[in-house]
Length: 69
Image 1 (cartoon, one colour):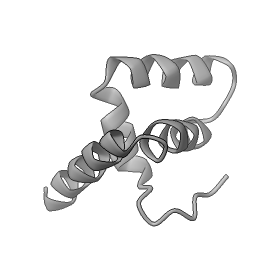
Image 2 (tube, helix red, strand yellow):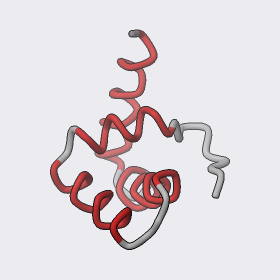
Image 3 (cartoon, rainbow, N blue to C red):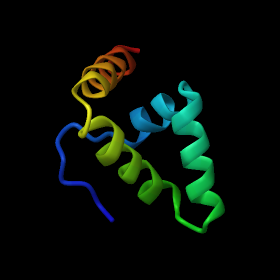
């Protein structure tokens, strides 16, 4: 699965997931069910970031911070 979304950045999403207890739980759960990391991150991104404007703003802000480092 490869994301065509211009905002999706796998490395940034992984950092974002590690900073949130709920997202980390869901990510670990999907990995435990046999999904690969990229698929799990895209599912979390689509469900939790794109589906929630507050999360979208937080993710984009987090991604911008990471791009500046």
